[in-house]
Amino acid sequence: MGNWVVNHWFSVLFLAVWLGLNVFLFVDAFLKYEKADKYYYTREILGSTLACARASALCLNFNSMLILLPVCRNLLSFLRGTCSSCSRTLRKQLDHNLTFHKLVAYMICLHTAIHIIAHLFNFDRYSRSRQATDGSLASILSSLSHDKKKGSSWLNPIQSPNMTVEYVTFTSIAGLTGVIMTIALILIVTSATEFIRKSYFEVFWYTHHLFIFYILGLGIHGIGGIVRGQTEKSMNESHPCKCAESFEMWDDHDSHCRRPDFEGHPPESWKWILAPVILYICERILRFYRSQQKVVITKVVMHPSKVVELQMNKRGFSMEVGQYIFVNCPSISLLEWHPFTLTSAPEEDFFSIHIRAAGDWTENLIRAFEQQYPTIPRIEVDGPFGTASEDVFQYEVAVLVGAGIGVTPFASILKSIWYKFQCADHNLKTKKIYFYWICRETGAFSWFNDLLTSLEQEMEELGKVGFLNYRLFLTGWDSNIVGHAALNFDKATDILTGLKQKTSFGRPMWDNEFSKIATSHPKSVVGVFLCGPQTLAKSLRKCCHRYSSLDPRKVQFYFNKENF
Image (cartoon, rainbow, N blue to C red):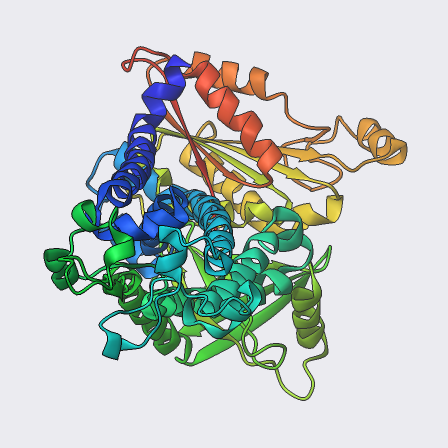
């Protein structure tokens, strides 16, 4: 627990401030509407559910202001660049952008539920007070009409006893936009589950763009002014504290109290979301402009296990290790953009990606490049965007863990290391790299066999054999593969990969690996980088906490995970 607090104190502080602001805004708005004389008569009909509805609405505005900021990728890349000289703790917060995006979405769902439930009670009380004939204050207030010639304005949106709640819901601006926003929110949240994203990415992609209807609905939701309060002029003439008890004499000429006038609460949501929406629109315009720049595919390589490598050129394209791009193929889908990590090094005169068949879109893309008929498909590229792997050379010791195609960001890093050794770069801060690649099938290792072979030779020639310690793990194997490997174990190279490093069968024993690293580097800062599944991330995160010393002068493990 102590190590976790040390490594995540800024995240905890940030979340505490965010949660504290939500609580403060809710409580402050609740007390305001519970005590404000302006809403005295409204509370006579609705009770405390008025304050609940308004408090949750304020929190909805606050979180809707934040929801778009974590997905402004150009903004995050800019901040990552400007924070390059900042402390490691501050830079790491940018890697949690999608986590914060999800937390804000959950908070929006919570306050949406509170807002809807409160208004269900409100409309029920509006309906009952409009149908009441007992002459109570609530029934008198509900009977006020739109007729301004009589010097009064309505308070209850249900204008006649025969009018139903459903009719008001679907004919008022507030009701109709509320229904549209709720449906959009439900579809967005349910389609964003991990299962849908992994198995039906297209469903996730299209439904997530329903946020446009949510934002538009939020901006105009308050125009109808269903929640109403007494006007300032009316309060000066007939203050509710003096006139509420004498409501039966409002129409008497001798009474100093008159029927109150009401006005709708002015819309405020647009004020909260205006700046983030403008920022997001600028973000999309910039991304659209960059995506329209011509991309030239210089080479297509078909690899085993349904993987295609695309090498490309684009004017003005500049990258760093570990970054990713969004790719669109108009001949397959005009609107779908998919993220892929760059596998090339910044020192190369092209940029490349490796695409594995993992759904309809990727399968269609690979099929199109296999056929190449009548011409090579046109590709549009947006990016590059920064990730946690950009900081790999900021650590004295780096642990790189790739699962399957998750090896791609580390291919970029390893290529860059090869070039740095070629150029005798003495500014390289990193002194040791541990590389773990976990695959289900042997064919996957051939994706970067040539790269690992080149690195082995380069390290030997430069006398830096100990700089790179890599381990390959095969999780999908049978007795024939194991037997064949055992019979050829004495050979200089591995029978499965052709590399000097032998392939291990099964999964790494992470406690043993971390214990060895901690022992070998007792006073180093170790960066652990993962591109792989969440289950593996949990295991590595726990090991980072377990093997980090509370003494900042001793070994410290910092966990970093790729998030798209």
